[in-house]
Image (cartoon, rainbow, N blue to C red; front, side, top):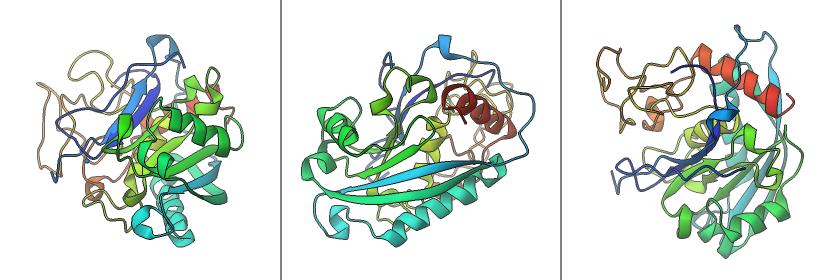
Length: 281
């Protein structure tokens, strides 16, 4: 909880016992899952949020990039219907925060190296984004991958923050596990909320458990302090003394997809402020 700040995120299929977060650049129990692996930005990126949520909806152009190791669904080759279903989830889940998403194009690339080895700060990521990324700071490039090895092994997804665009525009975007899309095969994480979570980072949000029970936390005043990320869908979870119950239904926690239901007003205000400052939206 608190003011406002930024970072780069990643979710992963190995955790809840380990947090997949990398050091800041200048720029999911079967087994356990590492819900997210995003790199935090530094304190100098904190900005002042506007006091009320804007009335009009901000629509974000989306360029969807399907990366696979074969032309089979099991190899990551998604259908247009699956892509459209994910866009539908994004629009439903972000509607109350006054954000919408418009799918501009979808492309398919069969590349086993990218599918298996893409991860934060890898050669494969650099190659993939250099070849496929479209648009500018206001355009969302959403990639799907397999996360089978390297720095991305076990991840559900990761993202870049608005504040890093200026210094590393070619790295900008969100990468999610292909089987986390609606109807996918990743148990408990297959309703499309991985993309919702990671895009929250791309729009400037931290995890609700950022900073634990002390300090500025996620720099949002209406999200209760949270000592540790949520696993599953617990009832009455409270990890910080003197605080209210943890907001396990928030899209920026690590709960199962089925538990996640929304953002707070403060988070919506923060996202609007961040994209206005760093993405020109």
